[in-house]
Amino acid sequence: EELEKPHSMEETEQQENEISKEQQDSQQSLEQNQKKKASESQKKAGDKMKKMAEQMAAMQMEMQQESIEMDIAALRALLENLITLSFDQEQLMADFGKLTPKDGKYVKLGQKQRKLKDDMRMIEDSIHSLAKRIKEPQFSSMVNNELDQINNNMNEAIAAIGERKTTTVGMHQQAGMTAVNNLALILSQMLDALNAQNNSNSENQGDGQCSK
Image 1 (cartoon, rainbow, N blue to C red):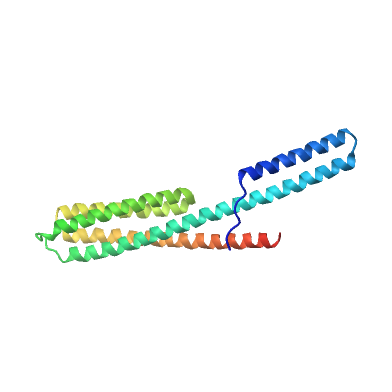
Image 2 (cartoon, rainbow, N blue to C red):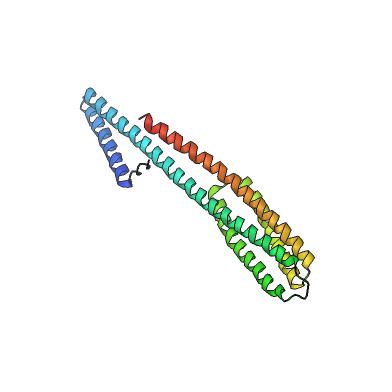
């Protein structure tokens, strides 16, 4: 079922005005020594305050769930991109393994390695944006460690390509690919955690609606 539409700011403002009016009515009734009427106005104000608080809590939960769903979608996209990059790096590593230092394909394959580095830079930017939203220090620390490994090894591989040191190229490509796979594993674990949190929020929201 679709989530209920969040209440607009105009609705909240209207409720605040109604509460204020009930409180004013209660105060006026007290001043006029109309205790019963004052009590009724105060009760109405209290009921409206409780209702508004419940609505605002529901809005906050819905916004939180929407944010989690956005993070889940972003993580899935990042995982797909990382898996693609890992396969491309594996293929490129195999292609380099067939070369001799004087092979004319060195230049073309070197360009492919540079493109993979550019692709990784775009993925890294997206990961940093996601990490800022998730705000999990341990997540950020592990991710940054693997990103450093990827970047360092890709840079070393590109440098070795320039010197046509095939064995060194393969060594750094392998190390970089391992870091890419480690990073994918970390993101996959975070995705599982967010899915669990999202499911829990959905259940709590459903229980809240049933209890009304």
